Image 1 (cartoon, rainbow, N blue to C red):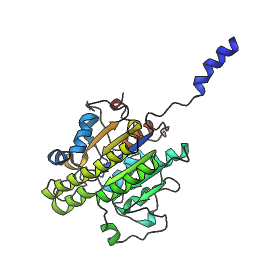
Image 2 (tube, one colour):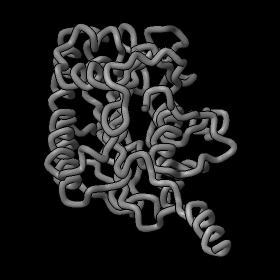
Image 3 (cartoon, one colour):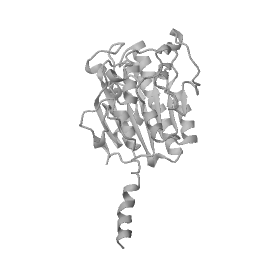
Image 4 (cartoon, rainbow, N blue to C red):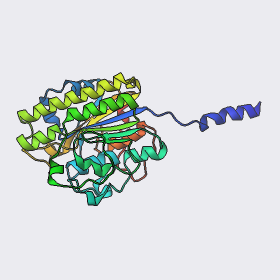
Length: 301
């Protein structure tokens, strides 16, 4: 009897904790300044924010630029640690030297299905060896060398193209961790200005792309076991960004899906590197000691 009792007490300690979510999707709306989002036609994003957990006062990193910020978003550490301070595709620099959320997940689950769907070539710097099932930039890419050039830097894929590619892949593979990037608002901001009618139209188009993604998750039959985290890399002012001012530093942070509190306003400070920490926490992947990010646990039941 004592042996049976001892075994009964031991068995629970041998069982791994179930992940809080089976599937996590991180969506970045490049240049997503909250004040302009508020003025734009974005019913999908605003519905997810109303139904889930949200703060419109999250902070990006210094400098508030695309590649350094996205590197923090997907590595969980400050630029002082990841050292990606450049903001253009520069092949000679190679991939980021600290682990990404994808490589950390793969270290625990080598067969995990992971993907990045991006509108800018510079995201190749976040593609570490054996970390991704797919890297899509206007279509699936190989890891063969790609030369950097002004033409490459200017080549930006439309949000709806990447959403369409991601949607088909999500329905086919039901991935564990996926990152999807929409560049249209940033492109319009640099050309026509933050808050311009052209940028607001780009936000509208990106929202439609977000709708494609949400529909694909539902059609894949995984909505009940998924969490979607939606944020941005920076805001902007005039036709630029990169300054340590609220216009450039403030970003949205939205969580929607399994276990997310309904209609919850996040009051704790949230920083962009908390996105990687939250994604890994949801997938039950231990966070490295050197992480600067922390899970936004208050957003979840």
